[in-house]
Amino acid sequence: MRSEPRAVTYAVCQAVGWLGWTAISVAFIALSRYEVTAARVGNALLINAAGFAISHGYRWFVRRRRWTQRTILALVPRLLLGSVVQGALLDACFLLCVRHPGVAGDPALRYETATPVILLFNFSIVYLLWSLIYFGVHWFERSRRAERAELSYLKSQLNPHFLFNALNSVRGLVAEDPVRAQASITRLAKLLRVALASVSADTVPLDRDLEVVEDYLALEAVRLEHRLRVTLDIAPDARAAPVPAMLVQTLVENAIKHGVARRRDGGELVVAARLAGRTLIIEVTNTAAPEPGEPGHGVGLANARERLQLLFGPGATLRLDRSRAELTVAEARIPLP
Figure 1: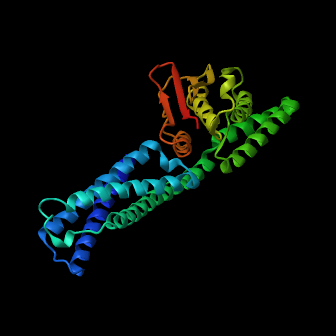
Figure 2: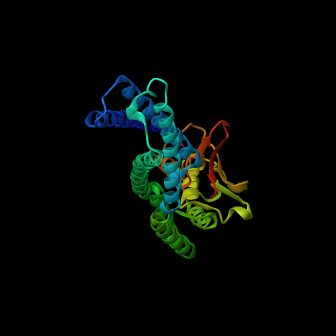
């Protein structure tokens, strides 16, 4: 639903911008020594329709090549070259239009040799301005989404229920097993420190994120004991791959909260990661709860999807598979740079 309003906004801006440019072209003719004729107005409309089509094709190319994900230094030469190429195409369309049989006999349309070069420069400037506006809007929107996602991410990193349960579990251990209680407090402090530090970090190696998961699972094991059975299946070549900070912990927390913890006999939790070509695949599988819940619609997973899109582009996905009654699988796919 989010992409539809953006598409409408783009279409409106394109139409208004090029129609406005057509009006400026006609006004320029009216203010010059040339007479405003139907042929010249038609030419202006035809040329600017070509300009519309060229810029729209350029947008398709930019989206396909994911230029909006590139750094400014990498983008600047591409924008300059793209503007010149578009200017040359529109220049060619202009020369074809003015030599149309309907206007070829107009003495006002006899251009000097230098005219195509001047037009190329002018049209290139127009397309450069178009590009700056287009990418500026994208950067502004991306920055605003990143800010919103980061604030929500901070609020949802550690579920308040988890903190409450962890503190209660540690309190019960203080008298029964002081050594284990001390170890649990250390893990909780480390987990909180990493969660707060991750707000300023875009990505971390998967191996580091798994360290957070191990601390988290150790704390949950204090509360769930034998009800929580964990298996880690991590391919060695996947451990160095970059992932959004706290991504795996979010998936694991969701699996325990909506699956294992809701079963009297507990259940299995499997965390797996592997590389498939240039894509990192992370799967968190858990025994499903007997009653259907609402996993996949919470703040944690929504923020995880948002961060994946912001950091790795539209090729990154996070989906929840509940097609099997006994299992729930959360799968994240991350294209590697």
